[in-house]
Image (cartoon, rainbow, N blue to C red):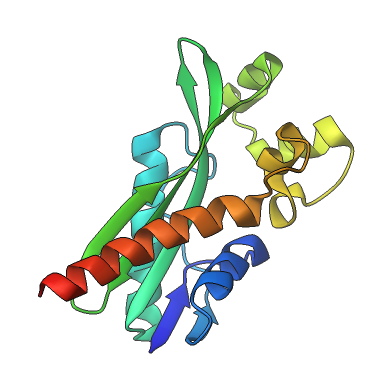
Length: 169
């Protein structure tokens, strides 16, 4: 089975590789079709769906994954959110969301001013490329959960839905 991941980010590709070990996995950079910093569940979900669909279209894979991180403003503060989508070459789409953690209140202004969470995180921890390593989730859970683990959970939810659906057919 040929599987495409709509990103070359190693945390996203690694999550799919960790869960679906017996597949030929292709990483391809595709646009999300949403803002570079998604600011809601809907926008983050749409970005994941767009990436999954484009990954299948551009690689002719059997299955494409789109994994997208974003933020969501609530009355309780700003939260990290993440969504994933699995698209098939036959046009089916499966969607799942992951865990959420609260972000510091002082992240809201720079994010609303147009900065990406990755930029805010780099300034916060004084290191580059957090998004390709532990991610914000790793920092704010004291490394109990990293970005790959977060996406592994979402990928498992997606594959589970896909396999359940295949059994029903």
